[in-house]
Amino acid sequence: MQAWCARNRGVLARYGVHYASVDNDEDPKHQWLLKEFRTGRFDRLQSELAQLVGGTLVLSCEGIMVHRGKIAPEQWAAFRAVFGGIDRSLFLVQRETGPWHQSLWRQGVLNPPQQGRLIMPSPEAFSVSRWLQEMTDLPDLARRMAGDTGAGTICIARFEANWLAEFKTLAGLPDDPALGDLPRVNESAPEVFVQLYLALGSGRDDVTDLRRVLFAVYCRRFPTTNLTLQNTARKFAALPPADQRQQLRTFVADLRVFAAPSSDVTALAKELGAVATAWISGR
Image (tube, rainbow, N blue to C red; front, side, top):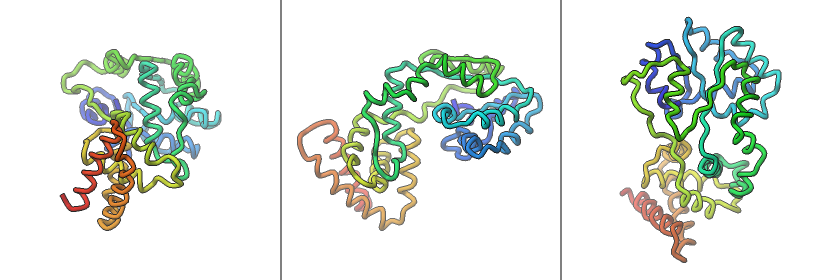
């Protein structure tokens, strides 16, 4: 939805719908809003609202839901005060539980490590965590978030259905062909890749270099829309060429532990090793 809104800014504006500004066009979510919650100052939000003249402002930042428990009541109060008498609506999309938990766990593995270490609970422990269970019960979470945000309207759409149509209705948008279809972005990383990363990174004191070179080599071989993989690959591309070559050599050496037995992870390791070797030689 974020990518769809960002790509259609001009068309949305014709109907009085303003998709708030973003800091990264490659990942067009309103992460800055989470930063304003942390500081307790909503200067940028006030600026976005000041640009509206009887229109609709769209804000989208999943981090608000993920980190909701860390936001103090007084911060929510300050947020509500910014809007004054402006009507607010809460739009949430609910996925089938099993696939969503799996996708979220894989993304958690890929996210930047804590203090350099790759620490992630098992999928089974992750799926029963209190934090995840609270998000899974979306009707109850929506009710509580409506109180947090001061939203008078709640719309919960099904991911597996035509949720974009429900979003258009909520935003007062017509079925304009100029808006186009939903783009496919930020796809989940394959399970085999996640298992390879876990096999290489578990137990290390610092996976920073490994993560950067592994993600870069994978993106070179398998173009993906996963934003975490893309953004990390860009960090590798920004390194001096000599550092890139050294990290690629280390990576190739690390992959030798997958010589046997044969498995999907071993096959992927072999393929990525060939890509890294060719990259070192300039091919």
